[in-house]
Image (cartoon, rainbow, N blue to C red; front, side, top):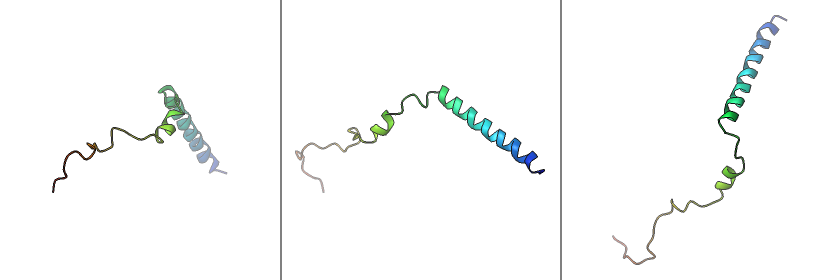
Length: 61
């Protein structure tokens, strides 16, 4: 029964930290836009593709 005096306060501290973390994230705007980031993965990055000139320059060896 004496373990309850240790476990209960530790559990309350963990819950308090989790609630404070959630409130902090919500106030910083972490949950404002939940639709765009998953959709961004599906689109190609045009800027990251290697540039080509359509075969106009001869290859260098």
